[in-house]
Image 1 (cartoon, chains in turn cyan, orange):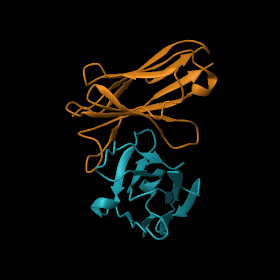
Image 2 (spheres, chains in turn blue, orange):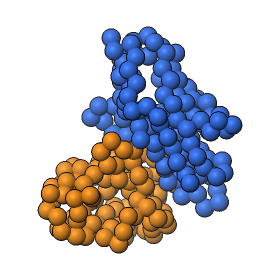
Image 3 (spheres, chains in turn green, cyan):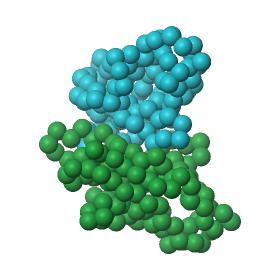
Length: 113
Length: 115
């Protein structure tokens, strides 16, 4: 079955502390992995995707195929990072992939001053 | 430029009624997706359109749900005989084409409450 699991509903850290939001997935094949973010009263938006291997707002995520994980990390959390974070996957490009996303349940990141 | 828009932003209806939710995608985006987000959950895929046709409707929960996109732009999600369990935020997203590297852009959602 295709599934994304985010084990933490809430992660609370102090400003300047490191952050790691966990994501594990189950998929038969080679999926594309993403992190989406939703700030308060804003719409869902793409934060980063593994295929582009970029760092956005200081966040990085490494795809570990052996552990089927795609954890999101940031070395020093900022208060403006407080938001809901969703890990998501879609099928690999080609082979009739529609691009539909399968989301995890989300983790609320709370960065305290 | 204008992003994805959805109307209405909120809809309250009585159990058993019919509702229509509208999505205006970004101009030129051929791929359009509907998702449903229940309280405390991540978005769940409902249906995908490529142009005018529904290329994947595997996420529609039952035959009370139907969606159209007659001219390949605006889409309408239709729910017949609404039930309290249909209460959720309905999200629409569009992208230039399906799959990567094209990013999906989400609308603000329609919050549906069935009383």
